[in-house]
Amino acid sequence: MYLANMAAIVKNEADQKIKDARKEKKNKYEYQANVNTLIGSLRE
Picture 1 (cartoon, rainbow, N blue to C red):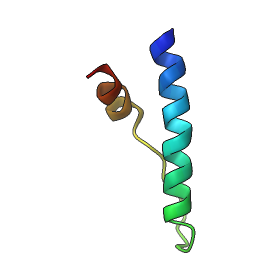
Picture 2: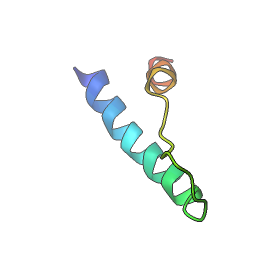
Picture 3: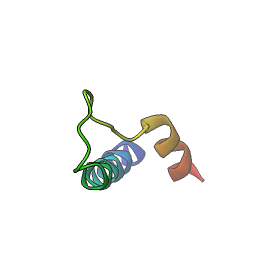
Picture 4: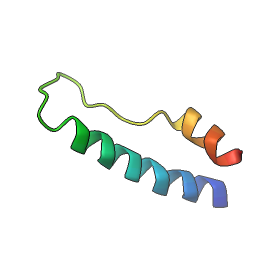
C-alpha cells in the first residue's frame, strides 16, 4: 500500500513536469509518465 501511495505522488509530480515542459507544443494527445518504469525506479 505504501508503494502505491508513493507511486501516485511521484506520478503526479512527473506529470506536472511533463506538462510544464510541453506547454508550448500542440499535440493531439497529452503526455504522461510511465507508471511501470516509475514503480521500478522506486523499488531500487
